Image 1 (cartoon, rainbow, N blue to C red):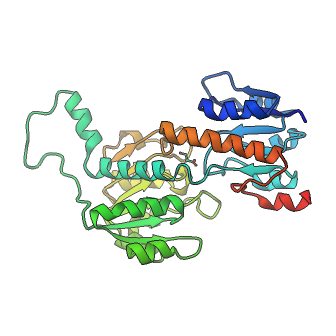
Image 2: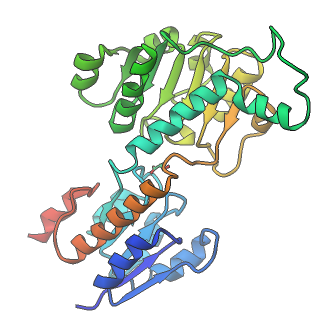
Image 3: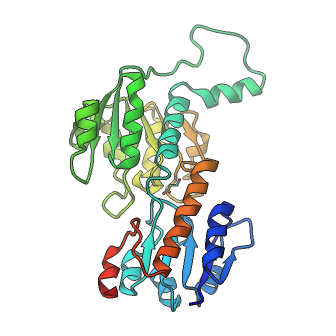
Length: 328
Ligand code: DGY
């Protein structure tokens, strides 16, 4: 059977090579930029498979237009860019890339935590600008990490990896989760599952790892910031819209919380007005999974997902397994 795949952005060669071995046609976005919605709409027509990025909006209209499409392999663990219900209705399998990016994303959350708490970016800017005039006792004082309380919002794979890394700093761990209790965290790391309000009141560092959905939209807003300690820091490597970014700007500006480290934004890649002017926030351009090794593993996983589905098998990382009930 001849099959036809489209990749919406250049990815590491390993995944492309795998796909080329299986599919008769593999085409890719030739530009060094995301495709516009209309370019994407044109490209999905007549494809058996598309390998998509988290920045591609795969909505019901596009899914409807993609006649013959069998699989959407999203090059990310999050898949809030895809209308899963529309895909499921059309019998299209959707896959993601869980597991392979857990460690790099947890590392990124820690990098942000350290950067903001120890004011590394502020110090770097100042040093480069020739404003470092010598050691001073009250210069760029940050916050301690050792022995503090770490609050994990969303203790799935990445949240768990984030919490496990806190062992080196002897931290107390609190967590919230939409799922079952995290036995590993509780039994091996002494973590305590609490209500969000308790986590907000008691944590010195809060790290967000929950997927985005209508339920988690603006989970952190003005009320939540008002419950946090004035000395606490907020880290987000999940999805921007879990935070009400306008409310965050105001909380940071008024020193209602000590600082934030962000890798993701509500209107990505745009920032809400005022955010970039604040000195108590570290801003990264969505680099959670951005290591050579992780992106290579993601490319292989996404390609293998496409090959598995086109071979009429069910991939383990399918996010809408209900489509397979109509296959038998
Ligand atoms: C994902 O895969 O969802 C992450 O946001 C990538 O950094």
